[in-house]
Length: 349
Ligand code: KG4
Ligand code: ZN
Image 1: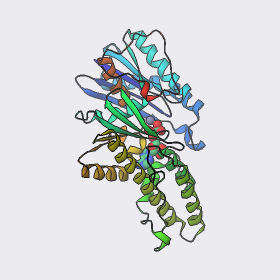
Image 2: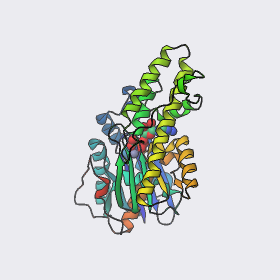
Image 3: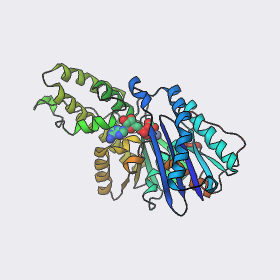
Image 4: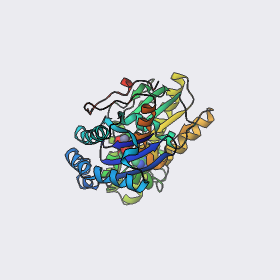
């Protein structure tokens, strides 16, 4: 069976084909450029660009992959969570196409797509594991005893990890979203030093790690980073100062995530962590978490870089798994959900 996956939950328009025999046949992602000048995603503009690009993109994907419409055995689309207008475009398209082709459709939860993304390249990844979801909108630790069963262990009470990177990056003039640019800049930053001994910035706090629990709160750390940033920008070496702040911020954020991952593993008695979401592309996070888990006899799994950020390959894959489990529906309507708690999903079998 060939499954067409559609993703339109935010500002990426994406589609992909996944099949039993060939695995991922092909995928397309378009990151909408229209939002850059606004410094953030403008929901209405996102919806309009999805309308504009989705249909030709799916046509091009089928053509380039040599797949006929009639060969599509199911359509999987992101039904939530995300921007409602944007989700409606993909949902209407996905449900409409499934109806026209007389094949089942399946609503995919965007975050389940992210959790399963590493499996696109490594079929040996199996639950139980803890998933760390770190994107521009989410920071979550989730226990995954089996695919489809998600127990949220902790979340951010305020800013998401990617949001903090993006806001500080924006203040540094690195554009939007600036997480990757901030990580690049951090490479030339000096190690944080107490009292600024070598002229560097002091280390930033690791919020909420000194008390029990698996919640996160990053807004204080963000404010601290902004304060120090203003100081170094007013100083005589603003370029180096910015890099120092980027490094201190990245170290504090990653340290906090690693500490909480280990705590989550201890709480639920598991050994492995699957990282998902845009911030999973961060190389420092990859190195630090991998090294820490190997020492504990476990492993950290990450999707390939391109599948960390929003894509339809993960949606096609999640949909394919559920369609194979008989959870597809012949279309009688469609829905999109701006909010959709992850723990409301049903297990795969
Ligand atoms: O999952 P995603 O594509 O979108 C959401 O659903 O939010 O994640 C995007 C986020 C942005 O905040 C972006 O700055 C961040 O992931 N990001 C990174 C890196 N690459 C992307 N943050 C830190 N380091 C990176 N290398
Ligand atoms: Zn996402």
